[in-house]
Image (cartoon, rainbow, N blue to C red; front, side):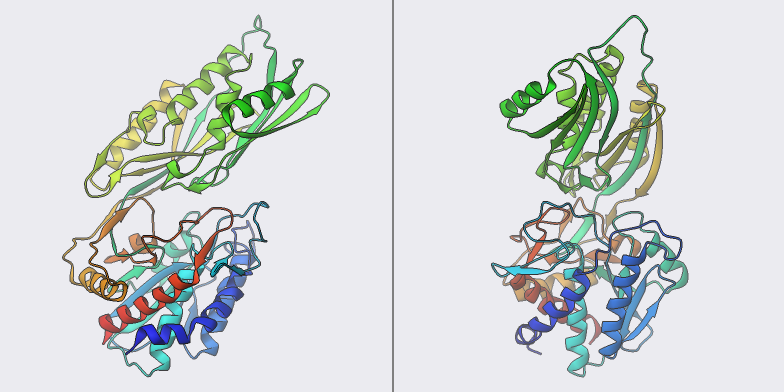
Length: 462
């Protein structure tokens, strides 16, 4: 089959159907009626309705996940993607949930992570089905709903449904991802500083907050403080000297100071600017209480560098590269305690339990407590696995390359499989805009991804 020609013929259909699900702001919401909120429920139903009209078998697993399937056979080829997205701020060039095409790119939250790749895999399945292809196994597109938070949807799905014989996740990049770093999400709580009565600081904290997703480099952090000093001039001078975007509002002697950074995926924290760290570095220049200064100093020293060196965690391996750390959130509670949300991505050969122990020691050194929220152990598949070799061969033929399998710091649904890898849909030269403002995909990349996915499914199931 000429998959290159067919992917071009289906390009308009791809854009039309993708736009339907991009318009739904499928960000998690706390809701009693639906497991992950109504928008995620709506996007799941919309995708299933599209597939039903196209003649596929569909199944909704109690709103936690769903699948779209065609073909027969004992074996099951799984394609795992997700329809939930991270929040979008208001600083986009065009509204994040109004799909817009400009410069041959499609802009919308979820265009790259992961609705665009999911639709590319779906269109690949539809091409094969429309052309009368009879696979020797069942082809199942599994739709996740909670990937950007806790993976509870996929966990629920595999308690109810069959594990694929093998599969891939279109939620990373080409050529093929054979290794994914281990991932640790945790919270460190520091108690409220014991403020001595004889020390009267010129600046007092009212609140401090930044970030809300551990898998994102926070792009905004805010402190509300009281001071008799002129902090407006001080903030403006500081931000100008360091070329940092900051703003300040004053109501009598109360100042609201906001620092803006640059969002990035937590697997590549060096690509962003952490607004929490920028704010804390500024606060350390103020005449705050010595106990607060000591606590903030410990935090900045621990997280100023994204390689984990401040936490005594710096390490690397040949298979997957260096450990990364991201201070994803920070909040002062009503009782004065400070909660840090931390995301660690560690090399596939590293000892996850040892890293957890080191984080516990960091917390205890500062009289704090450590809570492990989530731990996804590393994924690793031998490069000579027949399934992996088939995907790599298909990619190289379509792309005109001679690439080898690579590793990433991201976490994909491939970890949910007994035998699976991440496979596309970004190319080595694709702009990486996931979790960022003006998220987008190049339409040419998506057309090529459809071609590769159709050819891969064909080769694996002919």
